Image 1 (cartoon, rainbow, N blue to C red):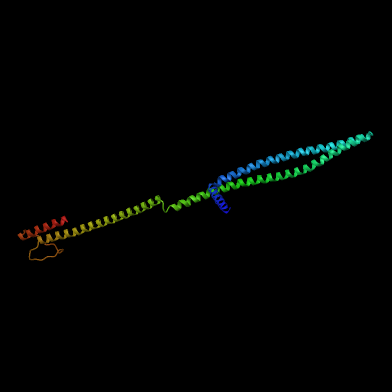
Image 2 (cartoon, rainbow, N blue to C red; image 1 turned 90 degrees about the horizontal axis):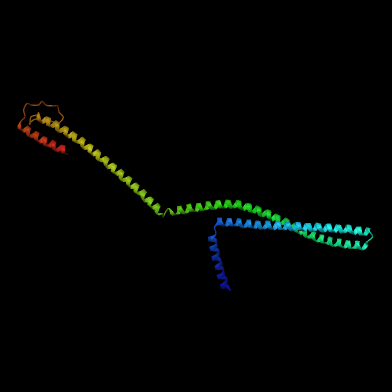
Length: 260
């Protein structure tokens, strides 16, 4: 017996788990409202039937009361006419109608109580259905908000391992690397330009110095020393062979310097 109880408990637990997972809150709310409305229809029919029965009993009671009164009058009429037997018969009929009216009155009271109870239950059910409809709309809104929040949380939770997020981060790193390379190239280009201008400036100084030296050597005797940047010497009318050799060397030196 214990084994069967355990198996039955396991089966019920599994069925409850399946049913719980299969339940859709929105559908359950809608179905609950439909069920309550069906109960309301049945209760209205019961109330209508009870009221109809109450009215029929009320008519029967009134009719019995009327018949009892009629037989009371007939008994009085027969007694007035001196027919005591007929008066007695009329009183017996009156008694029967009175007893019927009394029984109908008891039934009518019970039916009236039943109808009043059914009416109160009907009003209460209508109020509950109206309240349930209002709550249903609010619950559906809360369900939608909860689902949206759950989707957002799931999406945020997957961002760390998402392929799309990984690709995005790789592209961001790639862009940063490209920017770094561009900045490095710009710095290198700027240094080259500065070096080129510095070389030009240095070359210009050398050329100026060579021109000054050439002019000085062309107009100064060989045994006379002269420093660059001194006052200009007057140019002699002729050139010695040694000066011509120097000029050639200077020209060659200048040409080499121009090619740098």
